[in-house]
Length: 145
Image (tube, rainbow, N blue to C red):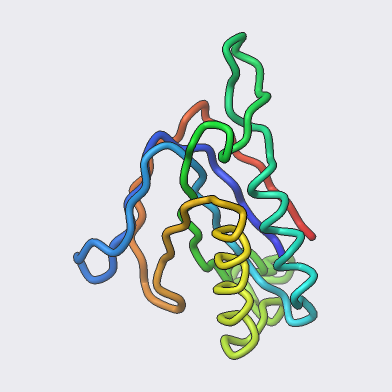
């Protein structure tokens, strides 16, 4: 599993011009899933997202997690994170899991995050989504498990 994690002041996701999900302060997480990923990856990702200390404390140091600040997570499926553009100019996506593998793991990651008390909003798996977000910092972390 591969994630691009961005600290946001707010984020909104729509499909076909219709609002689907929105969060206030929290994390916009773009999640890519590889063919070999499974339940252990979903558990590790959810654990990391809940505990990652990238929010500022009273002294301005990154010392607080999304849970600590009462934030939310917008979890967005993003197969293009496994795009390979090392040969030619058109990316190959053979490194991404097929939808029948990826979709259940995407939802399982969301469930495991929610079980840790983190409010989670989802995108629409496989849809052409439009995301507007107000990055905070900006802070962007790439995490693989």
